[in-house]
Amino acid sequence: MDIIIILIILLFSAIVHEVCHGLMAERLGDDTAREAGRITLNPISHIDPYGSILLPALMYFAQAPFTAHPIIFGAAKPVPVNFSQLHPRKLGMILVSLAGPFSNFALAVICGLIIKVGLANAIAYPILVDAIFVNLLLGTFNLIPIPPLDGSKIIVALAPDEWMNKILSLERWGFILILIFLYLGWLENILLPVLGLYSRIFRIDLGL
Image (cartoon, rainbow, N blue to C red; front, side):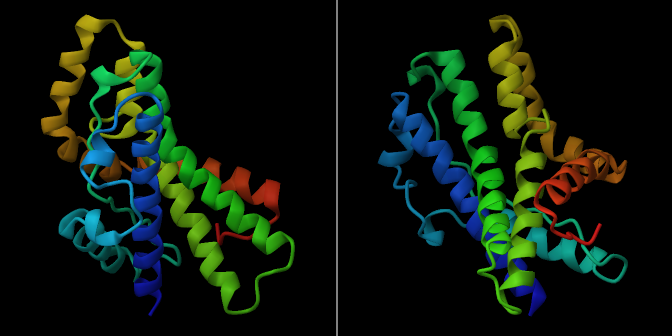
């Protein structure tokens, strides 16, 4: 039952993440995501069998016997964005890239506020804590500057134009680079301070 709840939270959070990318792009002049029918919370439009279901499930079952809070992440299908249509282009690229992770941090804050004002009963509390953990994970993970994660798009926007194609060409190796990053345990080194800061601000035990 726990894995089903976590997968639902993960899928919803990933969809909100992608929709926010599309909404920000639309606000800055690119309606590619709208034309593709991706500005919607309907999971059918966003679900990716591998990134949304298989990958998080495999990560959960690989880690669940060994830790109380397995690190699980997944992804919805990326919304299409034509960065050349953004105005201004480079700042727009940064804003569109930040919109997804920001939505996850915002969801984590909303869940924390629901707990702090006393609206969470015994059933809702652990679900909200899971939602906080998942969204902090998604927001933090996507800011890592490894193509095709959002952090890499921010680096591209800040780098000289002649570097753009070189950085984006690394996307073909992105999955391997991410696996190496996870294998070396670097995600935990980045994520734990974020979780700790959130716990101190909201006084919520995330099971660290």
